[in-house]
Image (cartoon, rainbow, N blue to C red; front, side):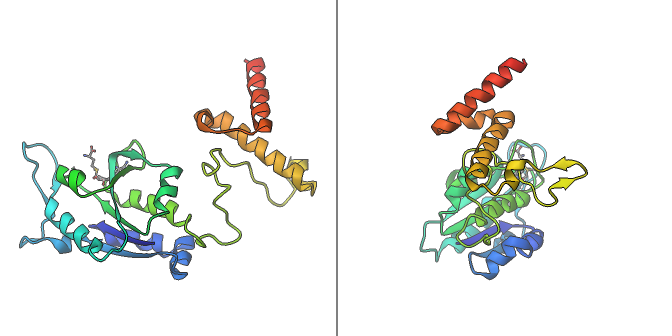
Amino acid sequence: MHIDVLTLFPEMFDGVFHSSILQRAHDKETFSYKLVNFRDYTTNKHNKVDDYPYGGGAGMVLTPQPLFDAVEDVTSKSTAKPRVVLMCPQGEPYNQKKAEELAEEDHLVFICGHYEGFDERIREHLVTDEISIGDYVLTGGELGAMVVMDSVIRLLPDALGNKESAPQDSFSTGLLEHPHYTRPADFRGMKVPDVLLSGDHAKIEAWRKQQALKRTYERRKELLEDKVLSKEEALYLKQLESEENSES
Ligand SMILES: C[S@@+](CC[C@H](N)C(=O)[O-])C[C@H]1O[C@@H](n2cnc3c(N)ncnc32)[C@H](O)[C@@H]1O
């Protein structure tokens, strides 16, 4: 996968691409990236990327010219049809399903907005996707693009080592993940559940499945609406519901 990030603040990405799993995945050539300062594409003499909004009002608006030229340049040699993602608080709410969808692509372009916003023609004619990372407003799209890229890159083949796994993670299975424990078995009187020390892998697997369902039921019931449950899971869910009803 190749990723182009169009930003006015490329230095913000230094940490994220030079640490931990993303750095390792980049070293293994799982993905390549280019940080593109779209100010370099301005055709006006003062390299201005923004202007006053028509109709008046507060704040400055990103002009279309540098962003159109930058996107056309970075996508001109692309053999695949690139996905051009605008980071935007008004966009589609981001989730694991979208991360899985983007991880299938060969070329992603992220546009990081700034200031009051961007000229509407960018949204209408330049981008393929608009993504919001939550119902709050950030100063710019950089942090959002980092969130999306991190969650996409870790899904690419070989990005995670043997000791990390994506398929069991929360949301990948449609549920929240089961709880984890490590050594010691007894920490200040707080004990690890016996089943995890039993060495019985079938029992451990069954316990983990139940715990994932319980945790999802307790914290994110709405995730269960779309989940296809096995017979055992459906029975356990009924048990959780009747326990909850008897408590209330
Ligand atoms: C200050 S915000 C502009 C907000 C805009 N005036 C509005 O009310 O929708 C500047 C830029 O930050 C990015 N941004 C802010 N919040 C975001 C969010 N929740 N998700 C993704 N990007 C966001 C976008 O690129 C946006 O253009």
